[in-house]
Length: 274
Length: 247
Image (cartoon, rainbow over all chains, first blue to last red; front, side, top):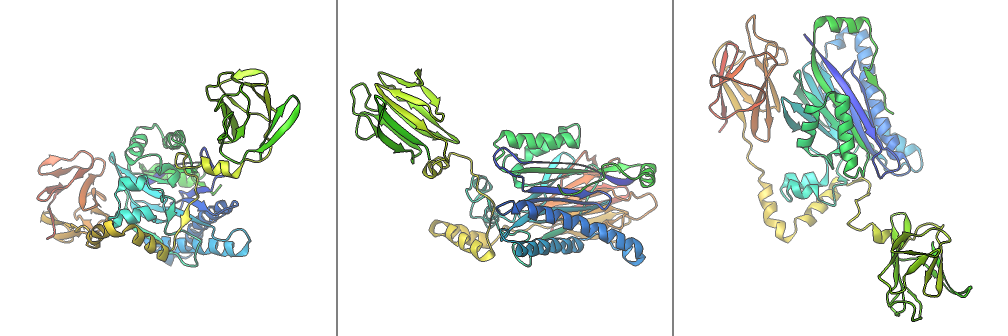
């Protein structure tokens, strides 16, 4: 048995905003999955989130190609360190783009990224987008928001409940592209078959609770349906920000299917930024 | 900005610019639009800005409020509508942009916040924390300075072949199996590549067996993810290990 990844993603402008500054993309062939939530006026947020998704996908595609031609590198596993390098590259790309053009000063983006290869799961994030893990009917938030309110919760100044009603929820402490250097938070974890990962922007998590996410993900007929149900719930409750959900599930796959997919590649294995 | 033209007998008496979120019309002097006539009630009607348009509401007047000769309780105002109050007419011209004051008044706390994400740098964040932790917060802050004690779990192998006989569970996820990725490395021909995962969340530990792998705790087979308690005896294949917390 080998492990394969099923994936479904959806992004929605929401009910209030005029444009969608969220973005997502993935390439299951290289096991890279990304969700970004851009910020900055005059459409700059969209530009920033798109750059971040593009740079991350490109980084792991090129890395895979260069390691294929150089067998010495091929053995190198995907680690937190390589994801951190990729996130730094995305940071620099946005920062440079912001310098080049008027009206894009201060543009930036949050990011959540996951690298999945077999049992190896590496996650990284900057800002207040989140990754949740649903494993055997339990949900766990894998990332800690880089936001003012969550920092206050960690320091014990306010409770989680107070944080959910705070007026300062929109204040984040780290973002890609706003400074020349960024400190991404990366972690090596372990995945197992049956695991479902949800990567999402705060447009969802402001409106939909952990236990509701768990219920939706475990009862939906498909990942695509779960994505739609989550987005719809957030919209019903106001949808005052853009909403993005990317769901991936680790599944066991008999060896011949793996063999066939190598012989006949294609299908919905990757999606670039929008 | 929208304007009102107060008319009597075809001639314009007054021109009023709507700069407030709400403007009242009535006979008394405290109204935004005063019509000194006995056919007009003290507070006769009110014009308010609603999200993206103006509305007029009759405030229970004696003689009623009419729009284009139809009596209304509450109605949306359209460009060039004629509001009739008593014998006076008010023409509404509202094709310009919304009044700034009106928008500000309406996007108060009751309306969902539309503010964009804001980034604070570290120094600014520290200042915010300092402000937040003023007088009554001082004690809470002192308490926070000593964060909740970390409890680290460990496994002591009692039986079976593994690469070590004691494992300190510091990482968020620990794999038990034959795989090269496994921290708790099982040996032997028939050991499963990946047998179970132990995850750590806020000082608590949970074990999740792989599909079709039998994991027992205190002799009882585990179904789905289960929390570990100090003293639990875990059996995976031929390995037996005791779970405990480090002192």
